[in-house]
Length: 157
Image 1 (spheres, rainbow, N blue to C red):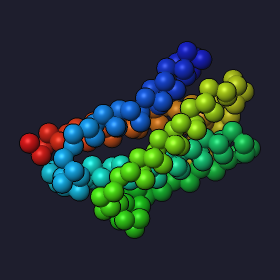
Image 2 (tube, rainbow, N blue to C red):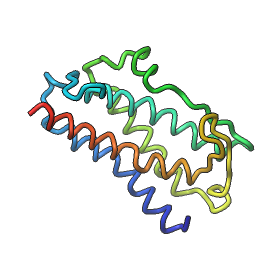
Image 3 (cartoon, rainbow, N blue to C red):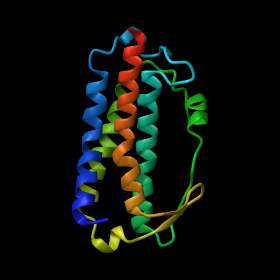
Image 4 (cartoon, rainbow, N blue to C red):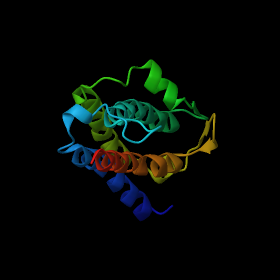
């Protein structure tokens, strides 16, 4: 991956919070917990997932940079949703956690050297895991969930 490609992905990663915020604009508060698409999370569950996922991802990229041979553990996001009570209608703390983690991580990413980007660890579910792998995943993550939120709103009518 070139430096320019990384910069574009970092910009996309940075824009993810605003993308989610825009998707939530005018979302009916009374429907934040609704499941209009069977088998899919509600808008609130998505936001709580983003807060937890972003907290974990922020630690993952730091481990990849700070530790030699970092081990990145996978987790079951469905169990997180169930056991960590994603059925909470108050989104503010989760949105703040999501925004805070991204706001702290963006400047960190911009300071990484070519040597940093060349590091590698091991993901317990997917094998070799590099900072560039991490960036490709998380640059798209929030945008994908923003799209899901928009689909939920459409399904609500």
